[in-house]
Structures are given as C-alpha cells and as structure tokens.
Image 1 (cartoon, rainbow, N blue to C red):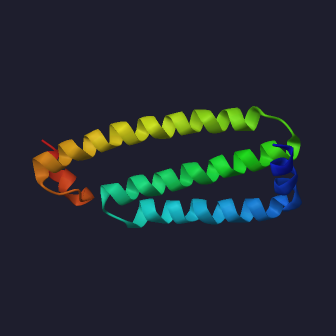
Image 2: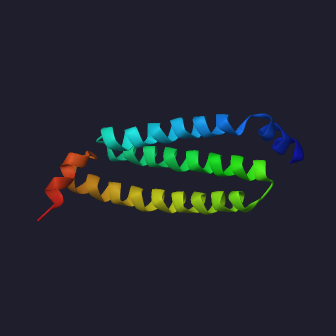
Amino acid sequence: MDSLIQNMQGIPLNHYLIFCSIIFVIGIIGVLIRRNVIIIMMSIELMLNSVNLLLAAFSAYRGDPSGQVFVFFIMALAAAEVAVGLAIIIMVYRNTKSVDIESLNKLRW
C-alpha cells in the first residue's frame, strides 16, 4: 500500500487535476449533446468516476483516508443510480419502444 501511495505522489497533483477535468468535461458534453438515455447515464458515471479519481489523488497526497471513504460513498450512490436508472429505462422502453429522450414527451398528459 505504501508503494502505491509513493507512486501516486510521484505524479504531480496538477496532472491529476487536468486529467480529471478533461474526463469530467467529456461527461458533461455527453450529457448535454447525446439524446440516448443509456449514453447519458454512462456520461454521468464518467463524471462520478472522475470525481472519485480526484478524491483518491487528494487523499493520497494528504495522507488522509477520508477522501477514500467518500469514494466508497460515491460508488454506492453510483450503484443505486444505475439500478434505478436502468429500471426507469426499461419502463420507458416498454411504453415507447425507444430509449430516445425526445420520446419521453409522449409520456406527458
């Protein structure tokens, strides 16, 4: 475990910040541009994973395990989001025979 922390500390923190920012921006672009619900959920997962990586990097640099505890909470939140989101997608597909965001307008009154 100590060698992992030393390897993470060998890479400057700025590199982690830039990398996680790029991944987060890719996730935001995926949410804003794409119309497929599955792709949107994957983009949200990408954003959550970039935050997880950044929390783990900050935790390793500070030597404080509280960031890693937050990573586990975010992972539990992501698992719950996937379970509920997939159930909603299945119900939308059963009603509209499509997973396109525009087809959700048919579900209004």
